Length: 329
Ligand code: RUB
Image (cartoon, rainbow, N blue to C red; front, side):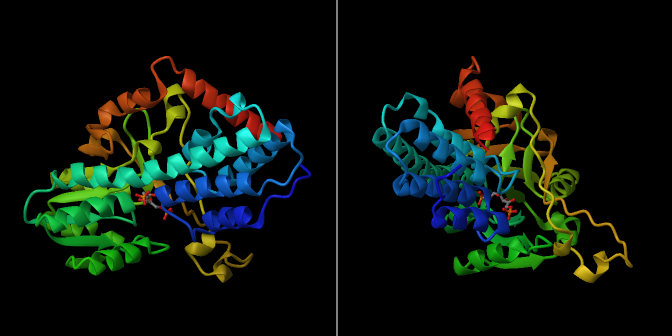
């Protein structure tokens, strides 16, 4: 497509792909930052069509990094929406910068409200279990601890990449008594747990939650033990496409995250599956805690329609932009 994509933009895309930048919220903010850098660094001709082609190309590169966290396309489409009404390159550049800043601010503001709403749902003297590393879930846990509601937290290792260690470190930094457990010990400790608090990579229209692999097993164990499971999810993690029947793709990563490379050689011939997210059905979720309020999962569609409108026009616009982005490739 002629115009070179700035190195810092490609670096962000690479870091999302390699998971140096990870977690749905951070992925979305980094993508917004990359769009902003791309707009600032545009050195092409002063022609709106060229700018748009360039920015759609940037969008496409970012969208191709990781498939599951819907926060990523939601960030990109939030920024692109309205670009069609701009009248000059400067106007378009400013649009992208303004919307990227707006999106980033909105995501950061959401943490405060989510921790505010969420902490109140944790009973005093509770033991909480969390999985993977979710900033939204951690915000609730940290706030609840400060309010004297939490006495200890079980944090799963989260194999194969051990994001649970980031969680454990963060909890300890806040002085929260933390017990790291292998993922397989969840059912063993569940009798000692009052609440499970996890994050989300995507929330479907029917209230199903996509989160780190293992979440649905934890939900199963929680339901069996009658332990309440709360999902901390900003509204930009709700998937509008699921309102028109689209499915959320589940990322599969390299087998080498699971077994030594030598196992994969012709001689050993072992097959490896490494799905990194799973789907927890709404029946296994007690509440979804968003920045606009707390909902039972069955009301997820209300959140979507609150944002995108009952007539689905905004979702259609979004799909239209998506098509343009894909065609530009
Ligand atoms: C991270 C993960 C997190 C959600 C929510 O998966 O599943 O629970 O992304 O995180 P990965 P946050 O490590 O594969 O990106 O609340 O920080 O957005």
